Structures are given as structure tokens and as C-alpha cells.
Length: 320
Length: 292
Image 1 (cartoon, rainbow over the protein chains, first blue to last red):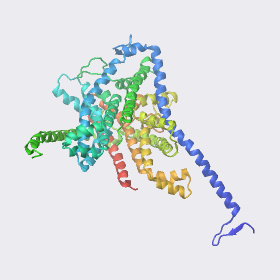
Image 2 (image 1 turned 90 degrees about the vertical axis):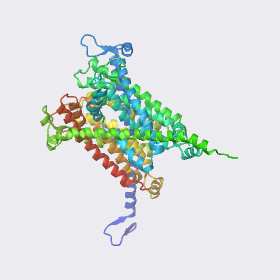
Image 3 (image 1 turned 180 degrees about the vertical axis):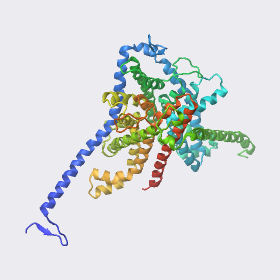
Image 4 (image 1 turned 60 degrees about the horizontal axis):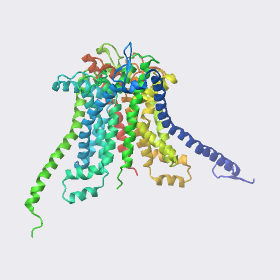
């Protein structure tokens, strides 16, 4: 018969036409897959864009509802934050911002020197072996859940500080600030170390050959060369400190105030959102909408800092 | 003529070298500080919580009496949460990474997605909670269910998985892809049979790190309105539930010393889970490192 051949030792007979048909079918299904898959994957990629859009829209819409009840001028200029007052609530976000800044400032004062010193030690002084051991251990610090840090701040750091500062209240700005500083130290250390390690060795060797000590090489050659990465790491870490929630919610207290005293109870923007979420502020009340306005303020703070960090590391990146 | 005056070199170098040593020890001390704090933290929590940690603690429901309280609901809830977050975040994250690395053209839209992902990574977790509260809990009326929390957490850890997967996919050598194309494989066949198997260690490592972030997060769940006290187990993804960090938060907020110890015991359970997950990640990374 024409067009049919039998394979020896095979029970199947195939006509060439059939084989071509089969092959074509296979090709069709695989080419459909080839066409569908990129579209499907594009949709997964769009989810991350939708998330950002969702965050921004949510915050804007609910904040608008809030501003239809509370004047925007009051929100940004009033220095009183008494949302739970039954007679007349006062919504001035400044006390919450001050609380946040106090904690963030302490965190930065703790984290920047320690983080940078660690980075210099790991990148310039430590042997390869030491670095390989210490760096992962430090990164463990960054992986500990924040609620654990909150517990640590409340049950260990605060009592310890009260030994030295008897006037310190149980809830205060100092203890969560220090603990947040410890939490973001590995972030500064790790990112700055990466930036300093990428400074080429020839620059170090040149400076050493001119008679510099290692310290002078680190501070006068490597540090300036890596400054963009270092600043970016600091900005990112501070932005993390601003958005940190559980440590301040546990150890910071819930007393929004404008004072710059570090020993008294405070409330940060994040801690306020937690306080309202836990309470029974019903859906649709002004208090309910106020968490979105506060969240929006927080979001703007961190977004500006993140964009700033990206700008610095892109604009001032030195290519070697 | 003497070009180098030995005494004056020594005179000038000596203080500089001393300062060098001084600062070196200072830098070393700063490095040790971090390790020291880690040590104190673990020691404190261990000594405080170990007395309460036994099988009864793992198998009991939460209770108002400290000696009867346990973490069963929280432990089971955490496992439920992981069961929701793992498939969703891996599917979305790896899909995005494959799209960006293998399919996307280098245009403004692609770089927009990329910038968007790195910004998303910097958004405070509590803001994700506000998103989840509005979209999942209220608009889709999922309530404070496993599903609502799982979706919120998936979005939260998405950037971590995307970035890790992108790096893993990028590190697969070009030659492997070219060999696959040369054998007549299509693009998708190449991705499924060549690129992904080669990138799987990196993807898994990123996935585990993301998951360990998800089970340690508290703030978004507080905002979603998860109950602080729950005495029954979820039966489906639409049921209410609570997780370990919430339970720890609940105990931390109580003034009695017994509850503080319970919180420490809960923290030990949480940390052990995280240590196990991270060890698996490290094992995977070491086993498959430098294959090419």
C-alpha cells in the first residue's frame, strides 16, 4: 500500500500522513502555550503594580472621607491628638509625627555609628573567614520578628534603663528607640559593607603604598568612594525605623504628645493605627477613617525616603 | 645625603599606627555589640520561657489561667496561614520573575514594574494591613479569615520572592538556554525544563526567607482585626484564626509575670520554627551552590 510502512519489531503501523498530522497537532498545542504563557505571566507581573495602585487608592479615598469630616488644616497644624474624646475630638497629626521622629532619631543615633563601624570592620579589617562567620549571624538579628524585639524592649531594656534613669516611665521613647536601632543596625552594616567591598582594591593599595595606615585608607579612601551606597543604606534603614510598628506598640505607650522628653510615654503613627485596630472603633466612624489619614502620612514619609535612597544610589554611583 | 630620616618617620608614624589599632578595636567592639545583644536576647527569652514550654503548652488552647494556656490555636493558625501564603506568593512571585527576566522587553513599562517592586519592598507592613482591611476584609467581605490574611501576607512578601527569583533566573548561564534552543525546544519548554530546574535552589531560598517573614509579621494582622483571643481551630480558609505573633502580642500586653513567661515560651516556639526554616534555606543554598 502506498504511503504506509511498517517498523520491524513494532506492533504499531503509522502512515506518514498520520505522523505529519500528529506532529502538526503537537506543534499547534505547543505554539498556543507559547502564546498564552507570556500573557499569563504578564498578569502575575501586573499584580505587583495593582498592589501599589491598591495601596495608593485605598489611602487616598479613605483619607478623603476623613478630610470631609475633619479639616485638613487642623490635621496638619493642630498640636492636639485626642481622637477618643467623647465631646470634641481633636485631630492634629503633629504629636504622632513627633513621637515617630523621637523614636526614629534615637534609632538612628544608635544604628548609624554601630552599623558603620561594623561595616568598616568587616570590609577593611576582618579576614575572609571572620566575615563569613559574623555576617550571617548579624543577619539573624534582622530576621528576628519585631514582636520579639518589642517583648525584649519592654521586659529587658526598659527595666535596665530604669536602673540608670529612675525617672523613666514604663512606656517611653528611649527603650523602643534603642531596640529599633539594634534592629536596623544589621541593615546598615550589611548594605554599607557591600558598598565598601565593591571599592576596587587598587585604590586601597595606592593609598597604602603612599604610607597610609589602614584607618586612613578606610576613612579617607574607601568611605568617600562608597558614600552613595552608605547613605542609601542609612536612608533605607531610617525609613524602616519610621514604619516599625510592634516595638513601639508594645514598649512606646499610647500618649501622643508634643514634648521632646524621651523618658515619657509617647505614641507613634504606627502605634496609633494598632491601637485603633485593636479597639472597637466601629466601621465608618471618624476614628476609623483617621487611621487611613495617619497611614497615608506614614506612607508618604517612607516613600519619599525610599525614592531618595534610590536616587542617591543611582545618581552618585561611582563606576569603577 | 640621607633621604629618609628614620627617627622622624618613626615619630610621625607611631601615633598614626596607635590610632589605627585604637579604631580597629573600636570597630571590632561595635561588631561584637550586635552579637552580644543577640546573645542576651536569646538567653533572656530562653531562661524566661523554658519553664512553661512543654507538650501541654503546645497542645492547649489559650486560657485566662496562665498555667493552662497554650499555643495550639496559634500554631495551627500559623500553619494555615503558611498553607495559603506559600502557593499564592510563589506563583505570583516566580511568574513575575520569569516574565521580567525572560519575556519582558527592555522598555519603560518593564522598568516601571521594576521600580514599583523595589518601592513596594519599602512600604511599611502596617500599610499592607490597611490595604488588606479595605480590599480583602471589607470590599470582598472575607472577614478576618485565613484567606484575607493569607492574601495580605502574600502581597507583603511578594517583592522578596520576586527579587530572589529574578537573581536566581539571571544567574542561569546563557549557554544552557542556547543548548536547549539548539535542540529545538521552544521558549516555554526551555524555561520549564532548563531554566527553572537550574534556578530552583535560589527560588526556594528566597521563598523560605519570604515565608519566615510572613509568619513573624504581626502589624498587618493586628490591622486586619485578627482576634487576640481565640479558643477554636479554623476548619476552612474562610474561618477566623489567630497566629503565634498575635498570641505573643496578647500575652506581652498583660501585666502579670506569668503571662510574660508565656509570651517568652511562645517566642521560643516561633524562633524554633524560624530557625528550622532558615536552616533548610541555608542547606539548600550550600548544597546547590556553584553548580556552574
